[in-house]
Every structure is written in C-alpha cells, then in structure tokens.
Image 1 (cartoon, rainbow, N blue to C red):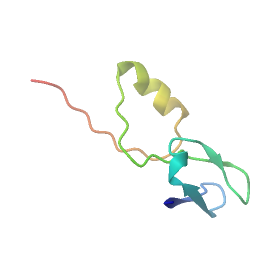
Image 2 (tube, rainbow, N blue to C red):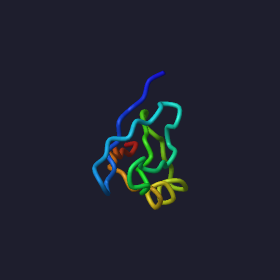
Image 3 (cartoon, rainbow, N blue to C red):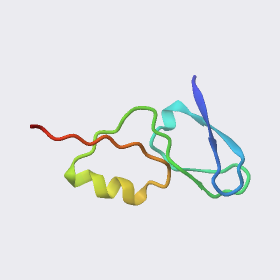
Length: 69
C-alpha cells in the first residue's frame, strides 16, 4: 500500500499519509496541528468549485488556466 510523507507546516515533522487518504485533512502526529490535504492527481475545478476548494486548502497549488479560442 503506497504512502507519502508530508511535512507539518508548524513543527516540520514528517508524517506518513496512506494514498487512500487523498484529499483528507489530517493532523500531525507530533504537534496535532492540521496537515494540508494531499492530492496525488490533478483536480478539475469549475467556476462553482474553484473558490470553495481554495478557501479551505492550505497547501501549495499549481494551477493551469486555459480558454477556448
């Protein structure tokens, strides 16, 4: 079962996150502060979902915007 390491933004502890917990906000095992949700695949957002996604997301994001000609 694959897992990934996420650094806690508060204390710097490495936390192992199982792949099936994608998109779930967790807690640091050391300081119990919130960890950013882990996304392994791109998330398609629309006009209706964009603001609500980023309002609750505290991690880094790479966004690609395009418009039809």
